[in-house]
Length: 337
Image 1: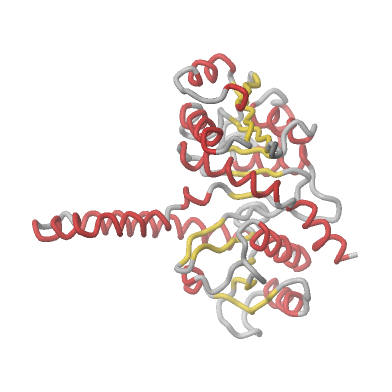
Image 2 (image 1 turned 90 degrees about the vertical axis):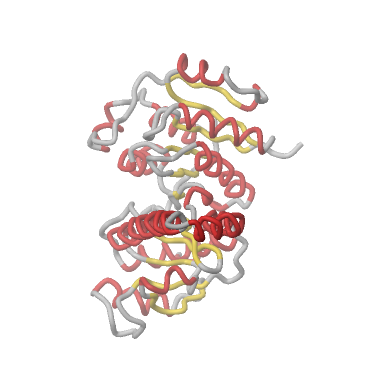
């Protein structure tokens, strides 16, 4: 029998919790028999919602948690004081080895803090970066870091590049992933102090396929597979990406409804357009893993619906089967020693 991937899911986190979270978990176990989900949160509410679905009861277990961390709460204080919150209880399932991974659409700050305080970093990893997949013209790229470390040192960006390469090669199947650092120009001498100091370190790093700088306009083309930056720039890139994408989709749909001719044309191109737009829907790529921890922690959008939760749970299977943490230890930590 294939090994089971065990995933703790924060059922109370996110704008659409717990209904969409529960639905996403059910869809995940229905799609993959090698997954078992621990839904963490108010047991009565979760159990009631599960009763509406047909699924293999052995694949979902409910773990009761009496507290919930709200988005506006100070993350460190919330993690330390709310020991029976759905986030902390679920993270402890990973820490204790009950589960392999944790998925949540809840408070970003609490997840980032909890991941490092509860699950803990792999020994030798300086910082754990948040690394979402973003759609591009040729497929997708990994943006690392996009929210965990607003201020980072050059040595940390080098580790981000190595971890990102491991992830893209092992999880996404990209051979010799192209690594680039976010910059305001292609020339090596351009950039702020952090970029100027990091560039030669990446250039002389034999463990990665470094191709130089990447400007923001080149990110959607798929010029690089791993896009390295500190979280301040990364978060701006990600949010702009999401905003422009959503706006373009709205404008395209509105434009198709302006006249009878455009409506007829819309009917003709609808199947192809739907498939194209699906590729640029961030929900299709699951959540963003917090790399470099002793277990997998995945943060999904606060507005996540069932499909994104399902995909986030499913991506945990590949992460475990490819033994990403061991590869990070071998290719990032041991190489640095």
